[in-house]
Length: 404
Image 1 (cartoon, rainbow, N blue to C red):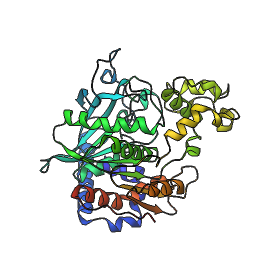
Image 2 (cartoon, rainbow, N blue to C red):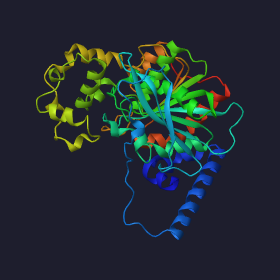
Image 3 (cartoon, rainbow, N blue to C red):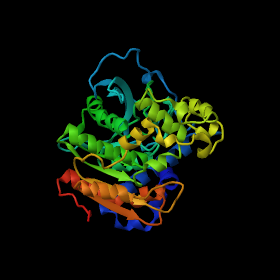
Image 4 (cartoon, helix red, strand yellow):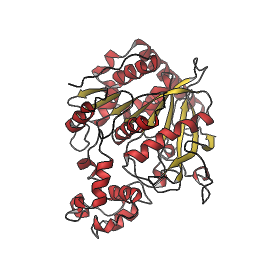
């Protein structure tokens, strides 16, 4: 239920920034909470108490399977869709899973999965405006897909967007859910998965409008910037801009996950030899994460125990870091980049190098900093900035920028 989401997943929603919410947002939240509370009370009155909570994850069903070889399809072509009512979402929200054609880092045809969330009621003229969601890093195995989580990983935030009249299209990224190799931590690959999810979503849910923005959290924020860079080449006139929440991870930050980094490099560059980067101790963990979502379930190793001396000088490692550095290509449309800076274990600040590079390119970027907040608190405290900025893009207003 939405009410339980608020306390557990969006801690920043209780902070003082809530005072600047637009009145309509307060009304919508109140209505959603009332609906959730009423439904919860009715369920308690009519159903006996259950001995345990339902599992957090959903089964990896045949919906996600694809024939081998995969029948040819254009990027964004829908393979199949299905209604899903197993998510912990307000009952007014309809959820439709999608499986669609995307492309691997080498350009091969692959399948990607995702979920479409749609408001109830009659859509406005031009159909529902769309927020494409780019999720944070969640693992590299098939069963790690956000569409297999009952709360969709960031369900409260996505439910809020839907409650405000936006449809949400949330890609899992190829290889999470679908049975292909996942390009873990690769900005370009994940960004194209997000872009291709949109035509597939419109084929599954015709009420989706043409105009859209992308939003992403942490590593998903990097993906959102990747969408903006890719759109400078694709040139979709209906793309309106990108929101990156809780900063943009830099190369030294993703080094904290060496085995996942190695898996991403191997997917992008198949000729890369993992044993040139990882120690013998780390190889079993590297193999383990291909089958499980929690690295902690494997051998307990620190990053320094996993990496060989001089690993960062490997040709493919350097190419991967260069490929995933934001600001090396011009972006299409404006950018809202929101960060905090209080939790050293969860980097959420806006890197000065990213700011300098984006501004140097004359990208239209607005940087908003929340000193003293960690990554999760930034999500809730920045809600008013997110919504105001997104509304302005769909309304056609000029985008602000605070580049020097």
